[in-house]
Image 1 (spheres, rainbow, N blue to C red):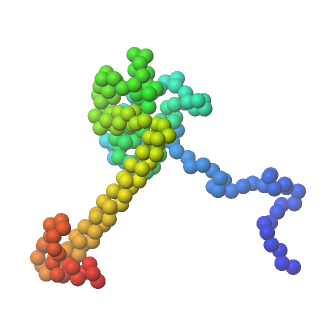
Image 2 (cartoon, rainbow, N blue to C red):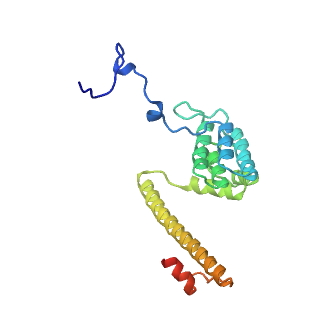
Image 3 (cartoon, helix red, strand yellow):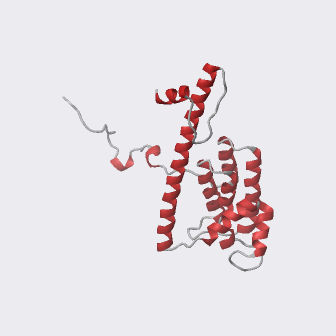
Length: 210
């Protein structure tokens, strides 16, 4: 007799059988500072990068204490999660730090009971987290979030993806050129490197075309 289908356990209903957790489990990103720093350490971020994100987190603790999202989730957990997504993508440390503080001008409590970016608030962020981090946060705060702007932002993101692809292709090409020139130089005993966009030595050209 040939049996087909999935094996079943007698007396156990379909909805009671254990399921493969890996098939349904959502992606897990950090929700605490320790989880975030652990992720960054595993990703190989150097100590100066970790120190920058720690400073951003320390400021976030002061700005977002007792702040919650509509779901009841602490706002700080959301901010750390945002930074965790960026760190998992190996984003530069200033961008990860900006992820921790990205809502500073929207929900941050600077003690003045005022929303939005002011000169004083920007000065505080620049002092605590650095000018590069504050600039990212200010540009994020200036974005419009409505139906039309989301389409514009998405279109702009697509152009960035194209630019990144072009840059990656150029870097790959130059690496191939460098390898070919090194090989040609080693065989001839003469170290040569053409300028960007310049002609290659015959030996190097042959190596690239082979």
